[in-house]
Length: 370
Image 1 (tube, rainbow, N blue to C red):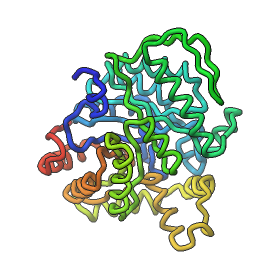
Image 2: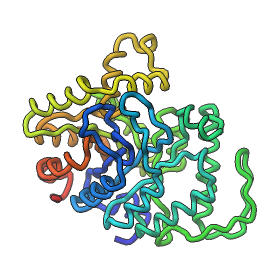
Image 3: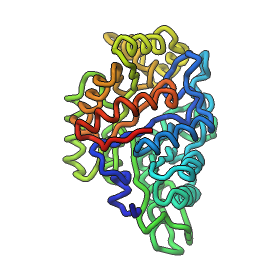
Image 4: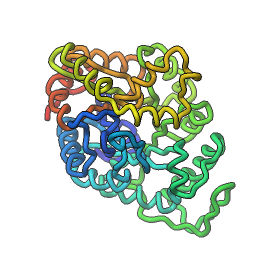
């Protein structure tokens, strides 16, 4: 397909439900577990996974922007592949996948970023996507010697930053930009993105200010669907659509799929409870201000929920149950679902062989296999 804006937004796919993989650029992925088979995050494994997902008809891969790990027994997410160079490498060896870069706006100069993104987009023939984030992890900002601005100022800066990038992708030459945070003079930025259109832009804001930024600027909003509360998620999607009818909402599911429900539940417990990296979990929660005093009634549930996926809908069961759970999320309004697994490459073949055909029979996807 040609890299038109419409095709980019659809991730070059007619499937009603888009599927992707989330967090594979990080050691341990998104599972805060000590099990030895946890995801390595190595380049070799990412390369193998991307080719597998591309062949199976997955639409996208979405990385986590991480600069400093969370410690614990496993140094959870202590090694992560930088997301733009990661995306460029994967785009060079795949044919259909849209590969996102997850980029902290305060840590990348917008003109450097605009050229990086355009270069990756040229490598992929129009398949690069931008997931812009403002940051929240104070430890990472300290490491960079950067200021973690107050919440609203982060989005004011992101507005200027993204505005400068969009302008750099446009036809102007020798333009100036003057704002509260940025001063740019006589700007020329080449090459432009592929095909005269621009990469799809995603944001994962949860706050009212952040979502207003997404509505103004982005093609897609990445939102967590609360566990067991798909009605709330459906209300959220409806609200987003009322503000921006063209905006798509994506979410994340933490998948444990096995031939039987008993096997799936046993493995979930083995990874997320019996062998959770609780020291890393507790550090993550402390950094987010999630304390027992703040959540007196469900603190332990929240703590356990962090251990397998750092948030997202837990989808555990046999292939019928997993397919139905994903279909329910789609029915609540999700345009796409980013999946995380304990070991993506080990678990994806079974998912593709068993769950994808079921989703096809439900009319959500066209049948595909690895």
